[in-house]
Image (cartoon, rainbow, N blue to C red):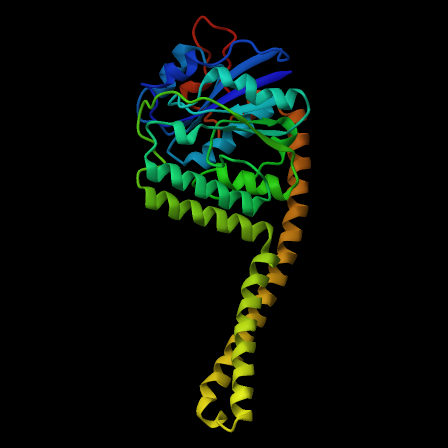
Length: 344
């Protein structure tokens, strides 16, 4: 059983050592543990520091592409490297490395394919009151959208079985945390959460530069993901509201006309027609969206099968593709004096 712990990094030269030293060296039930970083176009010495510390693998972008792209590049590399379990954690040492054993245990026991760490949000001192409330609100919205009971949706401390990782898709460019839960919930993937600990803050969060901006972008991700997976339900709800509003105005007009006052309320008749037409068009969009969603499921199944075949036949050297793992950078070289450190 092979575990690869991946760490997305952007200018993490100062904090990477803390995260590395906290990683587990042995877990019961795991035969091999390897460490991988995703260098998301760092402009400092992150790659050099990772090499000095002894990371086994380095995935490197030539320019910053964002957390979601980095996460998926790491997942793809881990799959090709033969990982049976993939753990994602942060380079700022927000999460306690010892709790990785808690994350992988449900997967080892075949109770779940995705395990998400539940942070003690209300007890976290460096979280503001506003941030705590928004974290709870966001997690509740994701639970509704995904049909799951995950209490801490924005948590980036999570573990994936190989099967779950093969089925992952992230289309937004902001964050993977919310979309992957909604996707897994709608695909009926076995998912659970475990309580974890957090370490003191080492630097401000880069996703929370502005609370309102984070809320805006997160709500966009949630809405888009929900519409992707349940378009008929989304558009049917809107369409039915519009048609009911039109019907209510139409009944009102008929009552007034029966009372001999219809001539003065032609506007209600016009609004009735507008609302009913808008509702019908919205329902039609929902039906079209449902057809597209069915085709997307077929494409996801094809993608899963192709990934599975690729990972069986691909050698590590095959990963050196432009935009994923640069073939012309120093990251592909072995750490001097350490033959075990592969740079994929």
